[in-house]
Image (cartoon, rainbow, N blue to C red; front, top):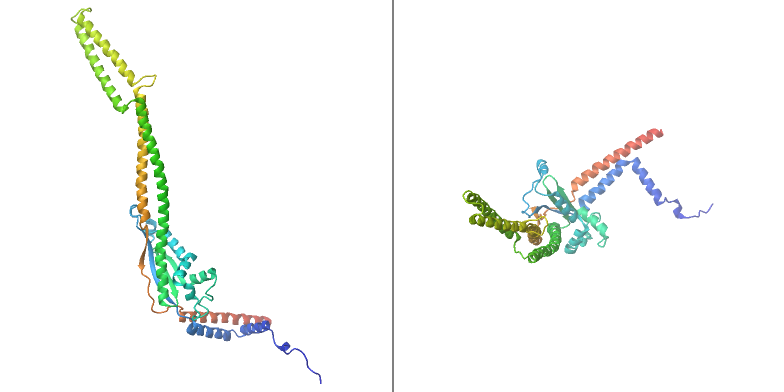
Length: 385
């Protein structure tokens, strides 16, 4: 009789072989395997899966800046959308509420890590480790928070899931409050940057106005004229008056020449007066204009140019001051308001997970896959035969 020796584990199949045998059994008998999977799904969703409460809120972003008037987007209006609101603000708000920054703020305020990693909840739906990396925590956060934009009405719809109704309500309220604060802080930063820029511009423009006014005063002092324009107008009236006087004297001389001899003293007197008026008229005209320059018209042109530059600088400075005051007002008030269409709801019944729906969908999917596997197995057997 031969003595049997050897390893008692040698006759047992390996783990890999057991999995292969199980897979082959599943292919050969797919419907029993599908039945087992459906049974496990019923156990999980019917008994094990933890209740999750859902809080909802609907918000829109409105601008409180009425100075620019009410602008309507005609294209969005014809499409049935909200023409008075910009979806860009809503998309920006949505991305912020989904961000890691938002998650960290909620975690600091509500201790979300402890809530989502509660060991009393089922291991499939909860966060496995309270100290999980931020990337995994953020992925879990996105699976429990739904923030979607309704393009048709221009509304941001927020839905949050939590294991208690109080936590679901607190998360939704935190999202709404933080969203409004974020939108206003962003607008305030932009307005503050604009105010800083305007303040620098006002300072530069003030220096420019002062320089322009000083140039006008220096020119007046150099020419010894307070207002060249008024002086020119005065000279113009003098010239006009002399021309009138000259015309009268010439007419008088013509009249006297008709009845006096050429050497008459009265006629000579009139001639002397005409010569004096003509000489004075030439002097006054030379003061107004001359081909050689340096006359009052050139002085007036330079003065008007300096005065125009000073007035232009003054107008720009005045406009900058108005813009600065407006910017300061904009920086201190709420430029954008997150208006609540539907306030955060306080859930009373756990609508997640949808147990019957999940069980039904899983059962139909498992049976469909089992039918496909059965069909494939039959095709393989037919080819083998």
